[in-house]
Image (cartoon, rainbow, N blue to C red; front, side):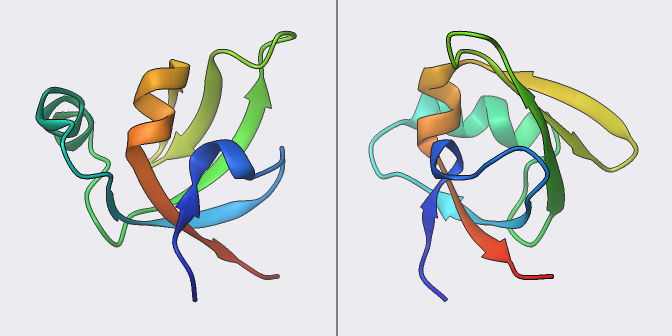
Length: 80
């Protein structure tokens, strides 16, 4: 599978964290601290009306990410 940006996924889709964009150490540390470690599965629950932020469900809780944070995250889409 090919890694894509979280922003390329639609509401209701499921994905797995595959890594992070290079060069964004601040956001990477923040995302890791929030539980977005490689191999973690999540669902896209909703986007705000203007597309920022995005809400995902992972590890039993909901997490809202701003556009800059979401673009740092590389994911793989899981086909159902």
